[in-house]
Length: 126
Image (cartoon, rainbow, N blue to C red; front, side, top):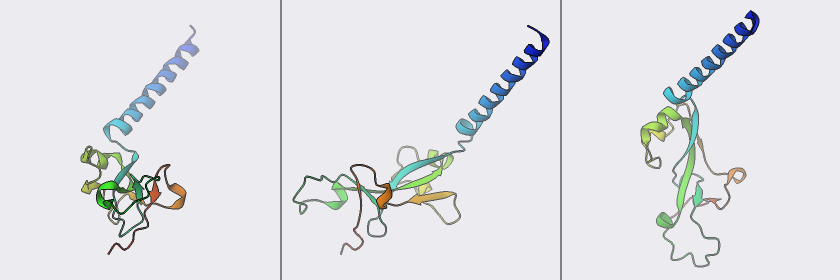
């Protein structure tokens, strides 16, 4: 192997090792990326995603809205904040977006409804 090839391969491997090291630090140590998490949502105050509805059900009078349906919204937040919640993301206070936070709440709208779910329209449940 001549000197130019050796220098090329050494530079190439240094570049690859540096890229792997930077990625490792960014994603595993600093957790510097965003994730989307489902959090609890109040259908009386905002439009929520709803899961748990059976489309074939005719008698909705026997349904307990709080037990039979899951109301949620999606929060886009840095992974380092979400990691402090563990598996209990529905009740984690670290996922509540405050003014000035690097956080985004995604509520339900017609363009972003997942298959098998729908948007809540319950605004006043007196």
